[in-house]
Image 1 (cartoon, helix red, strand yellow):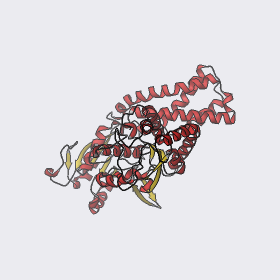
Image 2 (cartoon, one colour):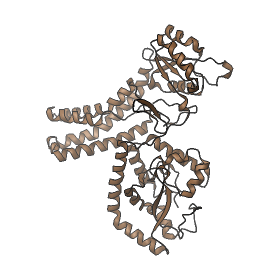
Image 3 (cartoon, one colour):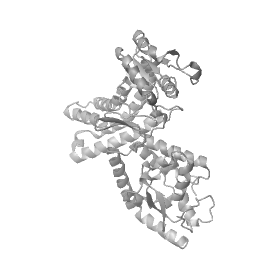
Image 4 (cartoon, one colour):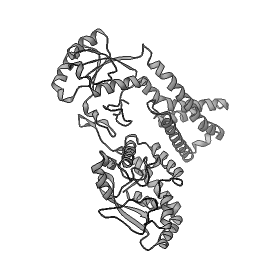
Length: 468
């Protein structure tokens, strides 16, 4: 996806892309095609007759998995992680469907097991090979699309750098056009200046330029309209890159209000179907966890009660979705229950912490009552950790963009916590890093990312040195 920012591009500063290029076509078809081909290959290896039953299974598998989620623009590790979770989810769906309809009885067990094992291996091989071959195919002289950019400014330079650094975009910027003196241009221009804006139309016609990007400020709207009129005599595709992209977009995308186009600059990832998926997974997992751990929760409650006088459950006001106050539950781990205008963060060797409290804090067992908060709809299993109201009021004034993390429900665990930012945040720098990870989660949310965070939480929580 194209990212627009005057600073080095952020992973999430992007709009949902609608273009259909060679790389996007391969991204869409690779995963479902590998699944189908592996099924046919395994069936052929075991001398199975490729009859109607396999045709139906192939068609169903393709329909369920198209389009594929893999992106050549993402890090390979992230893509392979998404593959693992999507494939496991696919297996669960297909097995459940097969058992419910008894259709699974039409296939030998060894064929299905071989198919389940072979597909991720073959996908990994195909994906790795394409990451090596595809950039060379796209960047060959006959396949590159030529483009020019109108506007020598931060937006235009960043756009040119995107084309330069991402071979999958298949575009070569051959020059810039601008009316200003070269003395006012920023440094590090990645392509030569070809002339003034008045020269743009003639240059495009004579040099068979295929795409024009207008990286001009929206304040110059009358001039832009005049420039568009002069470009109507060309066959080049024309794109407008408005300077709203100077900001860091959260779930940025195109939308419409009636027939009027609008651009989402800051939005929650949990709109529409995504919200239903998130809430369903929260309710199902929380209910199962509370059901399985109920006897253990009773033992923890008894331990808290015996450790020191006071209530078993500590309730504290936190900011929830859209910055609204919620009550968050924890097993009490201290001899005090601060929830006023000033709340002291827990510190290492905190004198207020009981011996049993230190144990449940270190192992994060004190957080288990928050699964009740999830069932209530106040929290999610995965999301930015909620902070005390007093801390929110402090940090929202000190850290730019702090309140954006409240576009989603707070979580029991989060992307910041599994990346080492758990526990006391005694400096602004530490809190800024935590917020940075929280916003990255908002930009890049997916079901597979949620499950990956849950797994990482389970793996690190016992040995987490930041917990006390």
